[in-house]
Image (cartoon, rainbow, N blue to C red; front, side, top):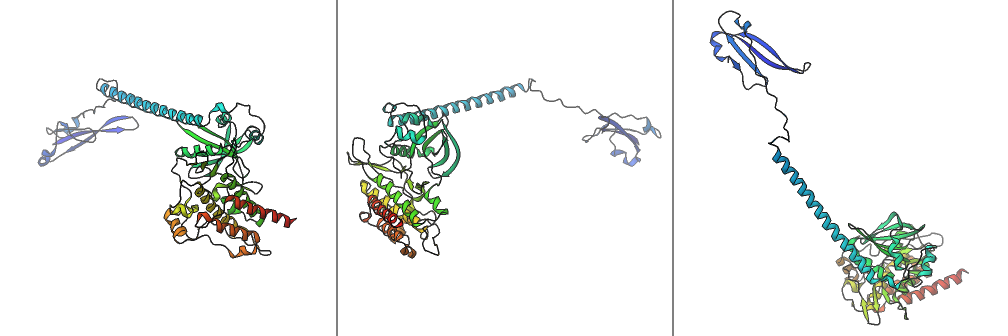
Length: 468
């Protein structure tokens, strides 16, 4: 039996299929394996075979034809079969878009209500009708002195527009409750504290304390304005104050050593600011007594003239003498554990006694004195100063827990170590006595801020006389 087979091969040059013929014969005993008169299925390529046996070379006359493979047409979305799918896809897309738009609208509406509520609270606390409108002119310092000698910063109506006029430059620090930026307002450098949205009560408390009449003092951070800046989707609570390029006392002590005069100037200025806070001023426009409750080196700023000023009043409390009540802020914030007094750590403090709050300030102030004294240089020929360290650096971890501090301060009754080299300097001897009296376990024994201020002021006077 003879056969002729034809296969289809794709020619790349022609771009189409071409037939390729194959001829051959089989012995009689193998003829059953040949599939004649048809194409073989399945094959990767089209193939067909025809057979003959009537004469020699009969397969030369055979011309088998392979079946053409049909090319499937591309699906058309306009075809009747695809129309339901197109309608379904369009409907789902439209519904999802509509749902997203509704959710976004509800969210923005709620945010707008929240912003309006905050503005309403701000206006309620500081009604604009109590403050005259005025034109802004002149340098910042002159403007504050002329318009608000009482110590409450700029007039409220000016404060409410100041955020639109401020140019943020760069971030200078970030803490647990907000971020501080260096900014410019009318060509002058200012510090802008941007509170986190979760710290709304801290912003209200600081704003309220800074707005207190007669609050302005050279050793308290100068307040300029408070404002809420927001749109429908976000809100920023801003506190604008004076800017001090030396930064916090904590940062300053890292890189600077102090001489005895610098130490005395800093300590006396802090005590002076603390004394002003703690003192109640009576009169028609008097000032209530205020306790800071978070005194630490990070909340004290170093001024260009070498003095210090106290900042961050988010935890402060006021004593209302007319009603004999303490205005405790509605916040869950607590002070810095490392600087907590023994009565705070063992929870024996009487929260309704304002003097108790003042004494916690004095305990924390004594630890700040210790930090500064370590960095004070002693010795005539060989100048020596200790590396900077935070209080209890050798007793507790870097981020101590409440229990860690309680065990060290209350149970073991440990206090920071007094260096022997301090005995060589009269000023350091005085500092040592002051800090030891201020960190006493019994709050009633501690010195008041006024007493410390007078002691250090006398030391400043005596030192000046000796120098002259």
